[in-house]
Amino acid sequence: MIEPLLYQIRIYFSTEFSDIFRSDKSNDKKQSLLTVLEKHNGVLLSQYDGFMSYVIEAEKNGIENYPLYQWTKDCLEIKNKVIKYKKSFTIYIDNEEVYAKDLADNIERDLMELVDKLTILRISKHDTNPKNNPQPPTKYR
Image 1 (cartoon, rainbow, N blue to C red):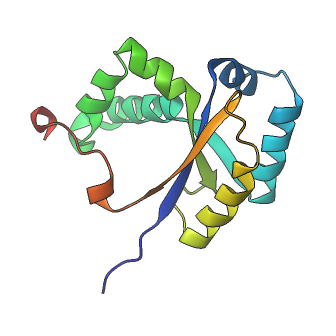
Image 2 (cartoon, rainbow, N blue to C red):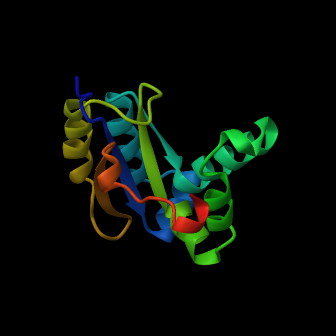
């Protein structure tokens, strides 16, 4: 039996809004975003923080058990990628990184209303089909 695809929503901020979101500062856009997240039992994790957590966990538990360790670690040493990852956030729903399509569609629809191209730049939806996701370069396989 084929497993159904699961989905993930990502949200991309301007540098300024990323700094505001990551801080204790408040503004109307941040409050609107938090309201949408709360409605869907969602939280944000920056790709940078997610990747750093993966590297730290791998180093703690043994990198041989983490197939993406070296690729992830190397990416975190590239300044322009770090800047990009700090502005890109993954939405977790009910503490899950991927979720059913209807959940993804619902939060995506609500978030699209917040996209203004100034603070919240865009929203993207990703699925768990390996063909649709970046694969490690050959040297990391």
